[in-house]
Amino acid sequence: MRPAKRLKRWLILGHRWLGIVTCLLFVVWFGSGLVMMSVGFPALTEEERRAGLPVLALDRVAVTPDAALAAAGQTDFPRALRLEMQDGGPVYRVTAWDGTRHAVSAVTGSPLAAVPEASAVAAAAHDPRAVRPRPLDPVERDQWSVTARYDPLRPFHRVALGDPDDTVLYVSARTGEVALDTSARERLWNWFGAIPHWIYLTPLRAQAALWRDVVLWVSGIATAGAVTGLVVGLLRLRPRRGFRLTPHRGWAAWHHLGGLVGGVTLVTFVASGWLSVNPNRWFGPRAPSRAMLESYAGNTAPTALDLDAVRAGACRDPVEVRFARIGGAARALIACRGAGLTVAPAEPPEAMRARIARAARLLLPEAPPPVTTLLSEEDAYWYAHHRPPRLPVLRVAFDDPAATWFHLDPVTGEVLDRLDRSGRVYRWLFHAPHSFDLGILLRHRAARDLLLWGIIAAGMVVSVSGTVVGWRRLRRNRI
Image 1 (cartoon, helix red, strand yellow):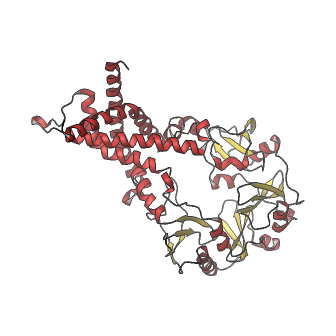
Image 2 (tube, helix red, strand yellow):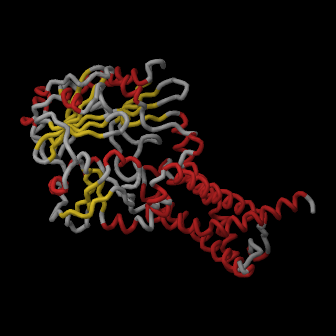
Image 3 (cartoon, rainbow, N blue to C red):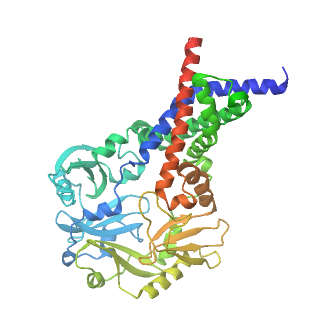
Protein backbone atom coordinates (compact mmCIF):
# COMPACT_ATOMS: atom_id res chain seq x y z
CA MET A 1 0.00 0.00 0.00
CA ARG A 2 1.30 3.41 -0.95
CA PRO A 3 2.21 5.75 1.94
CA ALA A 4 -0.58 8.21 1.05
CA LYS A 5 -3.21 5.47 1.09
CA ARG A 6 -1.82 4.04 4.31
CA LEU A 7 -1.95 7.47 5.95
CA LYS A 8 -5.52 8.00 4.77
CA ARG A 9 -6.57 4.60 6.08
CA TRP A 10 -5.09 5.26 9.51
CA LEU A 11 -6.65 8.71 9.50
CA ILE A 12 -10.09 7.21 8.87
CA LEU A 13 -9.60 4.47 11.47
CA GLY A 14 -8.24 6.96 13.97
CA HIS A 15 -11.20 9.28 13.55
CA ARG A 16 -13.66 6.40 13.69
CA TRP A 17 -12.49 5.17 17.07
CA LEU A 18 -11.72 8.58 18.49
CA GLY A 19 -15.24 9.58 17.45
CA ILE A 20 -16.77 6.54 19.11
CA VAL A 21 -14.98 7.50 22.33
CA THR A 22 -15.70 11.24 22.22
CA CYS A 23 -18.96 11.89 20.33
CA LEU A 24 -21.12 11.47 23.41
CA LEU A 25 -18.81 13.90 25.20
CA PHE A 26 -19.42 16.44 22.43
CA VAL A 27 -23.19 16.02 22.86
CA VAL A 28 -22.80 16.72 26.57
CA TRP A 29 -20.49 19.71 26.01
CA PHE A 30 -22.70 21.40 23.43
CA GLY A 31 -25.89 20.78 25.38
CA SER A 32 -24.39 21.97 28.65
CA GLY A 33 -22.86 24.99 26.92
CA LEU A 34 -26.35 25.99 25.83
CA VAL A 35 -27.53 25.84 29.46
CA MET A 36 -24.52 27.88 30.64
CA MET A 37 -25.51 30.74 28.37
CA SER A 38 -28.49 31.31 30.69
CA VAL A 39 -27.43 29.92 34.08
CA GLY A 40 -23.97 30.43 35.54
CA PHE A 41 -22.28 28.50 38.33
CA PRO A 42 -23.36 29.72 41.80
CA ALA A 43 -21.25 32.58 43.17
CA LEU A 44 -21.81 35.44 45.58
CA THR A 45 -21.28 38.77 43.83
CA GLU A 46 -19.87 41.81 45.61
CA GLU A 47 -23.23 43.55 45.21
CA GLU A 48 -25.07 40.62 46.85
CA ARG A 49 -22.54 40.37 49.65
CA ARG A 50 -22.69 44.06 50.52
CA ALA A 51 -26.48 44.12 50.28
CA GLY A 52 -26.57 41.52 53.06
CA LEU A 53 -24.37 43.51 55.46
CA PRO A 54 -26.00 45.44 58.34
CA VAL A 55 -25.16 49.09 58.89
CA LEU A 56 -21.75 49.42 60.53
CA ALA A 57 -21.71 50.90 64.05
CA LEU A 58 -18.53 52.94 63.69
CA ASP A 59 -19.13 54.62 67.05
CA ARG A 60 -18.61 51.25 68.77
CA VAL A 61 -15.19 50.62 67.17
CA ALA A 62 -12.66 50.85 70.00
CA VAL A 63 -9.76 48.88 68.46
CA THR A 64 -7.49 50.39 65.82
CA PRO A 65 -6.68 48.51 62.60
CA ASP A 66 -3.05 48.16 63.78
CA ALA A 67 -4.13 46.54 67.05
CA ALA A 68 -6.45 44.17 65.16
CA LEU A 69 -3.60 43.10 62.89
CA ALA A 70 -1.39 42.46 65.91
CA ALA A 71 -4.13 40.34 67.49
CA ALA A 72 -4.34 38.33 64.25
CA GLY A 73 -0.58 37.76 64.29
CA GLN A 74 0.15 39.97 61.26
CA THR A 75 3.35 42.03 61.32
CA ASP A 76 2.94 43.38 57.77
CA PHE A 77 -0.12 44.78 56.08
CA PRO A 78 -2.15 41.74 54.88
CA ARG A 79 -3.74 40.94 51.54
CA ALA A 80 -7.05 42.39 52.78
CA LEU A 81 -8.41 44.08 55.91
CA ARG A 82 -12.12 44.81 56.27
CA LEU A 83 -14.35 46.17 59.02
CA GLU A 84 -18.01 45.09 59.19
CA MET A 85 -20.70 43.91 61.61
CA GLN A 86 -21.17 40.42 63.06
CA ASP A 87 -23.46 39.34 65.89
CA GLY A 88 -24.41 42.94 66.59
CA GLY A 89 -20.83 44.15 66.97
CA PRO A 90 -18.11 45.44 64.62
CA VAL A 91 -15.34 43.01 63.65
CA TYR A 92 -12.14 43.18 61.62
CA ARG A 93 -11.76 40.51 58.93
CA VAL A 94 -8.14 39.79 58.01
CA THR A 95 -7.00 37.88 54.92
CA ALA A 96 -3.33 36.97 55.25
CA TRP A 97 -0.99 36.60 52.28
CA ASP A 98 -1.09 32.81 52.61
CA GLY A 99 -4.89 32.91 52.33
CA THR A 100 -5.74 32.19 55.97
CA ARG A 101 -8.60 34.19 57.49
CA HIS A 102 -8.92 35.78 60.91
CA ALA A 103 -11.75 37.64 62.64
CA VAL A 104 -10.98 40.07 65.48
CA SER A 105 -13.52 41.95 67.60
CA ALA A 106 -13.31 45.69 66.98
CA VAL A 107 -14.73 46.24 70.47
CA THR A 108 -12.45 44.06 72.61
CA GLY A 109 -9.55 43.27 70.27
CA SER A 110 -9.90 39.53 70.90
CA PRO A 111 -9.77 36.97 68.07
CA LEU A 112 -13.19 35.46 67.53
CA ALA A 113 -13.82 31.79 68.20
CA ALA A 114 -15.79 29.42 65.98
CA VAL A 115 -19.11 30.85 64.84
CA PRO A 116 -22.20 29.01 66.18
CA GLU A 117 -25.21 28.13 64.07
CA ALA A 118 -27.39 30.82 65.66
CA SER A 119 -24.92 33.52 64.58
CA ALA A 120 -24.96 32.19 61.03
CA VAL A 121 -28.77 32.38 60.94
CA ALA A 122 -28.60 35.93 62.34
CA ALA A 123 -26.09 36.93 59.64
CA ALA A 124 -28.31 35.44 56.92
CA ALA A 125 -31.34 37.33 58.27
CA HIS A 126 -29.77 40.62 57.13
CA ASP A 127 -29.91 39.51 53.49
CA PRO A 128 -32.68 41.48 51.73
CA ARG A 129 -33.97 38.22 50.23
CA ALA A 130 -34.49 36.62 53.66
CA VAL A 131 -38.09 35.72 54.56
CA ARG A 132 -37.90 32.90 57.12
CA PRO A 133 -34.22 31.95 57.61
CA ARG A 134 -33.67 28.45 58.95
CA PRO A 135 -30.54 26.36 59.40
CA LEU A 136 -29.73 23.36 57.21
CA ASP A 137 -27.12 20.67 57.76
CA PRO A 138 -23.57 22.12 57.86
CA VAL A 139 -21.08 21.03 55.21
CA GLU A 140 -17.31 20.82 54.93
CA ARG A 141 -17.38 20.65 51.12
CA ASP A 142 -20.18 20.06 48.64
CA GLN A 143 -20.91 20.45 44.94
CA TRP A 144 -21.25 24.24 45.13
CA SER A 145 -18.32 24.95 47.49
CA VAL A 146 -15.95 22.45 45.94
CA THR A 147 -13.12 24.71 44.73
CA ALA A 148 -10.00 25.59 46.73
CA ARG A 149 -10.98 29.28 47.00
CA TYR A 150 -13.31 28.29 49.86
CA ASP A 151 -10.72 26.28 51.80
CA PRO A 152 -9.78 29.07 54.28
CA LEU A 153 -13.46 29.45 55.24
CA ARG A 154 -14.45 25.83 55.81
CA PRO A 155 -16.62 24.39 57.31
CA PHE A 156 -19.87 26.14 56.43
CA HIS A 157 -23.22 26.66 58.10
CA ARG A 158 -25.96 26.54 55.49
CA VAL A 159 -28.99 28.77 55.95
CA ALA A 160 -32.14 28.63 53.80
CA LEU A 161 -33.65 32.11 53.40
CA GLY A 162 -37.19 30.85 52.82
CA ASP A 163 -37.61 33.10 49.79
CA PRO A 164 -39.41 32.17 46.54
CA ASP A 165 -36.07 31.34 44.87
CA ASP A 166 -35.18 28.88 47.66
CA THR A 167 -31.86 30.65 48.24
CA VAL A 168 -29.28 29.01 50.51
CA LEU A 169 -26.42 31.00 52.03
CA TYR A 170 -23.10 29.46 53.07
CA VAL A 171 -21.76 31.15 56.22
CA SER A 172 -18.21 30.38 57.31
CA ALA A 173 -18.14 28.62 60.68
CA ARG A 174 -14.59 29.92 61.04
CA THR A 175 -15.06 33.66 60.46
CA GLY A 176 -18.83 34.27 60.23
CA GLU A 177 -18.76 35.84 56.76
CA VAL A 178 -21.18 34.89 54.02
CA ALA A 179 -19.17 33.17 51.29
CA LEU A 180 -21.65 31.79 48.76
CA ASP A 181 -25.31 31.77 47.75
CA THR A 182 -27.20 29.30 45.59
CA SER A 183 -30.78 29.28 44.32
CA ALA A 184 -32.98 26.32 43.42
CA ARG A 185 -32.75 27.30 39.75
CA GLU A 186 -28.93 27.35 39.86
CA ARG A 187 -28.75 24.06 41.74
CA LEU A 188 -31.04 22.34 39.24
CA TRP A 189 -29.74 23.69 35.93
CA ASN A 190 -26.06 23.41 36.79
CA TRP A 191 -26.43 19.63 36.74
CA PHE A 192 -27.14 20.10 33.03
CA GLY A 193 -24.73 23.02 32.59
CA ALA A 194 -21.43 23.76 34.32
CA ILE A 195 -21.07 20.43 36.14
CA PRO A 196 -20.93 18.21 33.02
CA HIS A 197 -19.32 20.95 30.92
CA TRP A 198 -16.40 21.45 33.31
CA ILE A 199 -16.41 17.85 34.62
CA TYR A 200 -17.13 19.38 38.02
CA LEU A 201 -17.85 16.19 39.97
CA THR A 202 -17.14 16.87 43.64
CA PRO A 203 -14.71 13.98 44.40
CA LEU A 204 -12.71 14.84 41.27
CA ARG A 205 -12.83 18.65 41.51
CA ALA A 206 -11.76 18.51 45.16
CA GLN A 207 -8.37 17.29 43.87
CA ALA A 208 -7.38 20.26 41.73
CA ALA A 209 -4.27 18.75 40.13
CA LEU A 210 -6.06 15.50 39.21
CA TRP A 211 -9.08 17.38 37.85
CA ARG A 212 -6.81 19.55 35.70
CA ASP A 213 -5.04 16.49 34.27
CA VAL A 214 -8.37 14.82 33.49
CA VAL A 215 -9.64 17.90 31.66
CA LEU A 216 -6.39 18.19 29.70
CA TRP A 217 -6.44 14.55 28.61
CA VAL A 218 -10.15 14.36 27.83
CA SER A 219 -10.23 17.62 25.87
CA GLY A 220 -6.91 16.73 24.18
CA ILE A 221 -8.28 13.40 22.92
CA ALA A 222 -11.48 15.14 21.84
CA THR A 223 -9.43 17.73 19.92
CA ALA A 224 -7.63 14.94 18.07
CA GLY A 225 -11.01 13.40 17.19
CA ALA A 226 -12.34 16.72 15.89
CA VAL A 227 -9.22 17.50 13.83
CA THR A 228 -9.11 14.05 12.20
CA GLY A 229 -12.85 14.33 11.49
CA LEU A 230 -12.40 17.63 9.70
CA VAL A 231 -9.59 16.22 7.56
CA VAL A 232 -11.51 13.02 6.74
CA GLY A 233 -14.61 15.05 5.90
CA LEU A 234 -12.68 17.11 3.37
CA LEU A 235 -11.07 13.98 1.88
CA ARG A 236 -14.47 12.34 1.43
CA LEU A 237 -16.07 15.35 -0.19
CA ARG A 238 -17.58 14.13 -3.48
CA PRO A 239 -19.33 16.85 -5.51
CA ARG A 240 -21.73 15.08 -7.85
CA ARG A 241 -24.67 15.82 -10.05
CA GLY A 242 -27.77 16.94 -8.21
CA PHE A 243 -25.61 18.83 -5.68
CA ARG A 244 -24.91 15.66 -3.71
CA LEU A 245 -21.72 16.40 -1.72
CA THR A 246 -21.33 13.19 0.26
CA PRO A 247 -21.08 9.49 -0.61
CA HIS A 248 -22.94 8.64 2.61
CA ARG A 249 -26.62 8.32 3.42
CA GLY A 250 -28.75 8.65 6.52
CA TRP A 251 -27.03 9.45 9.80
CA ALA A 252 -23.59 9.15 8.21
CA ALA A 253 -24.53 11.82 5.67
CA TRP A 254 -25.77 14.12 8.43
CA HIS A 255 -22.49 13.57 10.26
CA HIS A 256 -20.39 14.25 7.15
CA LEU A 257 -22.28 17.36 6.01
CA GLY A 258 -22.65 18.71 9.54
CA GLY A 259 -18.92 18.28 10.04
CA LEU A 260 -18.19 20.16 6.82
CA VAL A 261 -20.38 23.07 7.99
CA GLY A 262 -19.41 23.16 11.66
CA GLY A 263 -16.13 21.25 11.73
CA VAL A 264 -13.86 24.27 12.10
CA THR A 265 -15.96 25.63 14.95
CA LEU A 266 -16.03 22.18 16.55
CA VAL A 267 -12.23 22.10 16.50
CA THR A 268 -11.89 25.64 17.86
CA PHE A 269 -14.43 24.98 20.63
CA VAL A 270 -12.74 21.89 21.97
CA ALA A 271 -9.18 23.16 21.41
CA SER A 272 -9.95 26.40 23.23
CA GLY A 273 -11.54 24.36 26.01
CA TRP A 274 -8.26 22.45 26.29
CA LEU A 275 -6.44 25.78 26.58
CA SER A 276 -8.82 26.94 29.34
CA VAL A 277 -6.90 25.01 31.99
CA ASN A 278 -3.61 26.60 30.93
CA PRO A 279 -1.59 23.59 29.72
CA ASN A 280 2.08 23.71 30.67
CA ARG A 281 1.38 27.06 32.40
CA TRP A 282 1.79 28.88 29.10
CA PHE A 283 -0.28 31.87 30.20
CA GLY A 284 0.55 34.25 33.00
CA PRO A 285 -1.66 34.81 36.09
CA ARG A 286 -4.36 37.47 36.11
CA ALA A 287 -3.78 38.41 39.75
CA PRO A 288 -0.91 40.75 40.71
CA SER A 289 1.80 39.15 42.83
CA ARG A 290 2.36 39.98 46.48
CA ALA A 291 5.55 41.86 45.58
CA MET A 292 3.67 44.02 43.08
CA LEU A 293 0.89 44.89 45.51
CA GLU A 294 3.30 45.63 48.35
CA SER A 295 5.33 47.87 46.08
CA TYR A 296 2.15 49.65 44.95
CA ALA A 297 1.15 50.14 48.60
CA GLY A 298 4.51 51.82 49.15
CA ASN A 299 4.78 50.49 52.70
CA THR A 300 4.30 47.05 54.24
CA ALA A 301 3.76 48.41 57.76
CA PRO A 302 0.26 48.39 59.31
CA THR A 303 -2.23 51.06 58.30
CA ALA A 304 -1.49 53.91 60.75
CA LEU A 305 -4.90 55.32 59.75
CA ASP A 306 -6.75 57.34 62.36
CA LEU A 307 -10.26 55.99 63.00
CA ASP A 308 -11.48 59.57 63.38
CA ALA A 309 -10.64 60.09 59.70
CA VAL A 310 -12.77 57.06 58.84
CA ARG A 311 -15.68 58.33 60.91
CA ALA A 312 -15.37 61.80 59.40
CA GLY A 313 -15.36 60.46 55.85
CA ALA A 314 -18.11 57.90 56.36
CA CYS A 315 -21.45 58.16 54.61
CA ARG A 316 -24.79 58.03 56.38
CA ASP A 317 -25.21 54.24 56.21
CA PRO A 318 -21.78 52.58 55.95
CA VAL A 319 -21.81 48.78 55.74
CA GLU A 320 -18.10 48.03 55.27
CA VAL A 321 -14.70 49.67 55.50
CA ARG A 322 -11.71 48.30 53.60
CA PHE A 323 -8.28 49.54 54.59
CA ALA A 324 -5.53 50.00 52.00
CA ARG A 325 -2.30 51.77 51.19
CA ILE A 326 -1.72 53.63 47.94
CA GLY A 327 1.78 54.94 47.33
CA GLY A 328 2.60 55.02 51.05
CA ALA A 329 -0.62 56.79 52.09
CA ALA A 330 -3.20 54.99 54.21
CA ARG A 331 -6.72 55.03 52.81
CA ALA A 332 -10.11 53.65 53.83
CA LEU A 333 -12.62 52.56 51.18
CA ILE A 334 -16.08 52.89 52.69
CA ALA A 335 -19.01 50.99 51.13
CA CYS A 336 -22.33 52.75 51.64
CA ARG A 337 -25.84 51.30 51.65
CA GLY A 338 -27.41 51.86 48.23
CA ALA A 339 -24.37 53.75 46.92
CA GLY A 340 -20.81 53.19 45.79
CA LEU A 341 -17.50 53.57 47.57
CA THR A 342 -16.18 56.71 49.24
CA VAL A 343 -12.54 57.25 50.13
CA ALA A 344 -11.26 58.59 53.45
CA PRO A 345 -9.43 60.86 53.96
CA ALA A 346 -11.22 62.57 51.09
CA GLU A 347 -9.30 64.45 48.41
CA PRO A 348 -10.27 66.00 45.04
CA PRO A 349 -10.73 63.44 42.22
CA GLU A 350 -7.85 64.93 40.23
CA ALA A 351 -5.49 64.67 43.19
CA MET A 352 -6.59 61.09 43.90
CA ARG A 353 -6.11 60.09 40.27
CA ALA A 354 -2.64 61.65 40.22
CA ARG A 355 -1.76 59.76 43.42
CA ILE A 356 -2.93 56.50 41.87
CA ALA A 357 -0.94 57.16 38.68
CA ARG A 358 2.23 57.81 40.71
CA ALA A 359 1.69 54.70 42.81
CA ALA A 360 0.99 52.63 39.69
CA ARG A 361 4.60 53.14 38.58
CA LEU A 362 5.64 51.16 41.67
CA LEU A 363 3.84 48.04 40.44
CA LEU A 364 6.90 47.36 38.26
CA PRO A 365 9.54 49.78 39.60
CA GLU A 366 12.33 48.29 37.47
CA ALA A 367 10.44 49.02 34.21
CA PRO A 368 10.35 52.38 32.39
CA PRO A 369 7.46 54.71 33.37
CA PRO A 370 4.19 53.26 32.07
CA VAL A 371 1.66 54.73 29.69
CA THR A 372 -1.60 55.41 31.54
CA THR A 373 -4.93 55.54 29.70
CA LEU A 374 -8.39 56.26 31.11
CA LEU A 375 -10.99 53.92 29.58
CA SER A 376 -14.56 55.15 29.66
CA GLU A 377 -16.05 52.23 27.70
CA GLU A 378 -15.42 48.56 27.07
CA ASP A 379 -12.73 47.40 24.67
CA ALA A 380 -11.30 44.06 23.58
CA TYR A 381 -9.39 43.53 26.84
CA TRP A 382 -11.67 45.16 29.42
CA TYR A 383 -15.23 43.93 29.20
CA ALA A 384 -17.72 41.79 31.10
CA HIS A 385 -19.62 38.67 30.04
CA HIS A 386 -22.91 38.95 31.91
CA ARG A 387 -22.90 42.33 33.64
CA PRO A 388 -21.42 45.77 32.91
CA PRO A 389 -17.71 46.13 33.77
CA ARG A 390 -16.45 48.68 36.23
CA LEU A 391 -15.97 51.95 34.35
CA PRO A 392 -14.13 54.25 34.04
CA VAL A 393 -10.89 52.34 34.60
CA LEU A 394 -7.20 53.20 34.35
CA ARG A 395 -5.06 51.03 32.10
CA VAL A 396 -1.39 51.17 33.05
CA ALA A 397 0.79 49.67 30.30
CA PHE A 398 4.45 48.89 31.06
CA ASP A 399 7.24 48.35 28.55
CA ASP A 400 8.69 45.41 30.49
CA PRO A 401 9.73 42.09 28.84
CA ALA A 402 6.22 40.66 29.45
CA ALA A 403 4.48 43.86 28.21
CA THR A 404 2.38 43.90 31.38
CA TRP A 405 -0.84 45.86 31.76
CA PHE A 406 -2.74 46.63 34.95
CA HIS A 407 -6.29 47.90 35.32
CA LEU A 408 -6.98 50.16 38.31
CA ASP A 409 -10.08 51.85 39.69
CA PRO A 410 -9.44 55.61 39.31
CA VAL A 411 -11.70 56.44 42.27
CA THR A 412 -10.55 53.95 44.91
CA GLY A 413 -7.12 52.95 43.60
CA GLU A 414 -7.90 49.22 43.69
CA VAL A 415 -5.74 47.06 41.41
CA LEU A 416 -8.38 45.14 39.47
CA ASP A 417 -6.25 42.79 37.39
CA ARG A 418 -2.94 42.13 35.66
CA LEU A 419 -2.67 41.23 31.99
CA ASP A 420 0.65 40.45 30.35
CA ARG A 421 1.35 39.54 26.72
CA SER A 422 0.53 35.87 27.29
CA GLY A 423 -2.77 36.85 28.92
CA ARG A 424 -3.73 38.90 25.90
CA VAL A 425 -2.87 35.95 23.65
CA TYR A 426 -5.04 33.74 25.88
CA ARG A 427 -7.90 36.18 25.41
CA TRP A 428 -7.82 35.51 21.65
CA LEU A 429 -7.11 31.78 21.88
CA PHE A 430 -9.78 30.99 24.48
CA HIS A 431 -12.42 33.71 24.95
CA ALA A 432 -12.70 34.69 21.28
CA PRO A 433 -13.32 31.18 19.82
CA HIS A 434 -15.06 29.72 22.88
CA SER A 435 -17.48 32.53 23.77
CA PHE A 436 -17.27 34.69 20.62
CA ASP A 437 -16.23 37.70 22.70
CA LEU A 438 -14.99 39.74 19.77
CA GLY A 439 -15.67 42.80 17.65
CA ILE A 440 -19.20 44.00 17.27
CA LEU A 441 -20.54 40.96 19.14
CA LEU A 442 -19.17 42.43 22.39
CA ARG A 443 -21.54 45.37 22.03
CA HIS A 444 -24.50 43.36 20.72
CA ARG A 445 -24.92 40.42 23.07
CA ALA A 446 -28.21 39.32 21.50
CA ALA A 447 -26.46 38.87 18.14
CA ARG A 448 -23.65 36.95 19.83
CA ASP A 449 -26.11 34.66 21.58
CA LEU A 450 -27.95 34.02 18.30
CA LEU A 451 -24.69 33.12 16.60
CA LEU A 452 -23.75 30.80 19.45
CA TRP A 453 -27.14 29.11 19.26
CA GLY A 454 -26.60 28.43 15.57
CA ILE A 455 -23.10 27.09 16.09
CA ILE A 456 -24.22 24.89 18.98
CA ALA A 457 -27.06 23.54 16.80
CA ALA A 458 -24.53 22.61 14.08
CA GLY A 459 -22.30 21.04 16.72
CA MET A 460 -25.21 19.00 18.07
CA VAL A 461 -25.96 17.70 14.55
CA VAL A 462 -22.35 16.50 14.21
CA SER A 463 -22.22 15.06 17.73
CA VAL A 464 -25.61 13.30 17.79
CA SER A 465 -25.16 11.82 14.32
CA GLY A 466 -21.64 10.71 15.25
CA THR A 467 -22.96 9.05 18.40
CA VAL A 468 -25.58 7.14 16.37
CA VAL A 469 -23.06 6.09 13.72
CA GLY A 470 -20.57 5.01 16.39
CA TRP A 471 -23.20 2.99 18.27
CA ARG A 472 -24.20 1.21 15.07
CA ARG A 473 -20.55 0.40 14.35
CA LEU A 474 -20.13 -1.09 17.83
CA ARG A 475 -23.30 -3.18 17.45
CA ARG A 476 -22.11 -4.53 14.08
CA ASN A 477 -18.78 -5.48 15.64
CA ARG A 478 -20.58 -6.87 18.70
CA ILE A 479 -18.34 -4.93 21.03
